[in-house]
Length: 327
Image 1 (cartoon, one colour):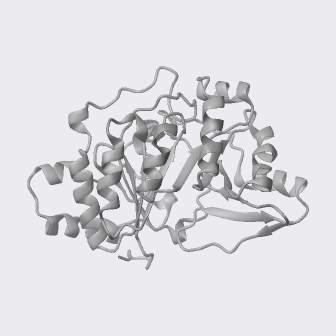
Image 2 (image 1 turned 180 degrees about the horizontal axis):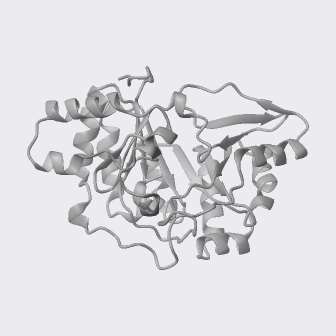
């Protein structure tokens, strides 16, 4: 399907839970957030139905996120159901890696080998400062297990001024010996409350650090839907990426919808949530009705994140935790 700006929309991100076992300060407050009761979350049956309808509309890629998706009971069953849908030949998971290890064999059996692993520092002390948890060694074990088992791994690091900028080169150096993408992400205001006068370490700042260290950085041509601008270093096995999530420089090739754990569809990360598909389904609508609603939402998708932010009904102070949004 294409939207009114002729962008092909074929990728859906679905949050299966708003719960997380880490407390990254850029995502939620130390005390956590008020979690939604299970009855208010999309059931696995509802998610599978949505995926079947989206598959009929031409969607071919799905990413499951959270919170931490492996916190939700029987998450593997949802993955099994999804693997049976022929349309989705690309199934991805974004995870913090703390609960993944015991599922590696089953994931490989299902052909699910594309994992985004969130890690913002290679220093255990800074990792604890950011996540408020002592899980650094566990996450690194998961990283090495994924690599050893042939998974396609992308490492996501949110870069915050005064917190972990000194990790940029250390993380980038992982691409020397490992065939991974290390992606540096601008911090966003989705921390459960808008940050006034956010002093951001921008994509330009990240590029400056990388170019100061690597004299032979080369840009890799991007594909439709890419959020990261990829770079390579001669002789390195992996790639380095920069995601201008706050600057929003990639909107012209956006190819995605987001669905929160409660079924709220976001056609842009910066909108309020344009429709609750959970309530629509529970009212007894047909698959044809669902398809028509998705078509309408895609047609009305805003030009970019700045336009979506202007159209918000709720004030900036109501910006949600990223754990509630689903990344």
